[in-house]
Length: 228
Length: 228
DNA sequence: CGGACTTTGAGAACGATTGCACAAGCGGGA
DNA sequence: TCCCGCTTGTGCAATCGTTCTCAAAGTCCG
Image (cartoon, rainbow over all chains, first blue to last red; front, side):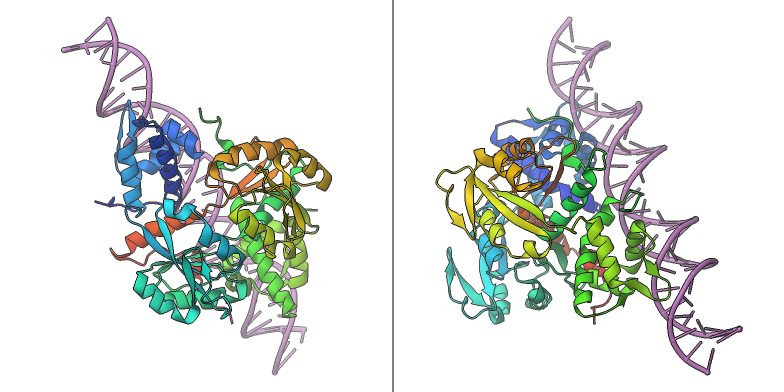
């Protein structure tokens, strides 16, 4: 029943936004939301919300809107958030450290269950409730914890090597924070977050701002009105 | 001379990839690159590279490729990286702390020149070579350092408030790490990085993997061959 | 000097995504 | 019961982005 058809990538990328907006709405004991309200909360426009949700199925009621709890359940099922995902972080430097301590993951269905680093000096140290394991132990760790998702938080030079090892160990979804291009075989998902790239994109529009025009406005900026 | 025409957003988002690839190429004292090689280094396909670069101008030589140094200069000018940008980070928690210590920014044309936090207990503490300033001092800090770019690394509830203050202080480019939708007025650029959302997207494809198919493969994964 | 080879730049086809507009469906009140 | 107002779901058109293809333009070699 997990929605027969194919869901466009652009829609998938927005489902988490709706999910978060619905969580907030549910907290306020609201029974139903309209696409209009959901759109305002998620920072997109209403037509997009309706089309996106229609890919999941006809879960709304005309004249009324969407049942918050029901829609939450459908989206969380679609996103695979009905159970927690164990996650391993490779690289316990600045960023890896911060990610390991970040509380936001657990609340959203992801739990950091293992930390790995190549530096022998770091192996064995404790961070929060976890002990850093050696990179060579990756296959064992992944197998024991049933890990499918890995986070790369190493320097750029190590990223490809680490990705290869993750894949070999059986990880099939990778989130890469290292500023490097990483290749993975078919059947493995890869997403990247690159802070420097984001800043450089901002810099592009920042520089063009003076010449005139309305600058660069994303979906969020285009949302006509504040919520409430 | 900064390239008359409008450059598509998708192209702008890839320019930093080419920039990084060119930096690596220049380090190896290579004089020219073909679109094919640049594509492999950036993890995209060659046709896209050529089309993207053609938006900047006709900077290649048929039968030869692109002059590395020249193209580097053109792209860095286009991205506004010919000078350093001063940046302020708001929120010195886990993530803000890690970002403040991250060395990768300076090397890429961005320098963290100020840290700000709302928590009186944190104001006055030193992180690296910087002293944390109070949120109320934001306008002064922004004006004194000529800051145009701000990073939000606060909890979600504070994000909108902080964004408003950044805009009031004169910041016109914002990078938001808080898991919340933020609205900014026209003329202000906003980009967001949301770790939980990235993981949820991975989770979506991870969950769909078992039913069969080749899974979810991004541009990077589709790159046919490893470089070198 | 001419031909073979390489690589760019761009036109055109194609595909994905967005936004509009509106019919269809539902609830509530007379 | 019927009508009215509200909101969804979706067909359609327009926009945006990607990929294919190939002529044009250059280098290199004999």
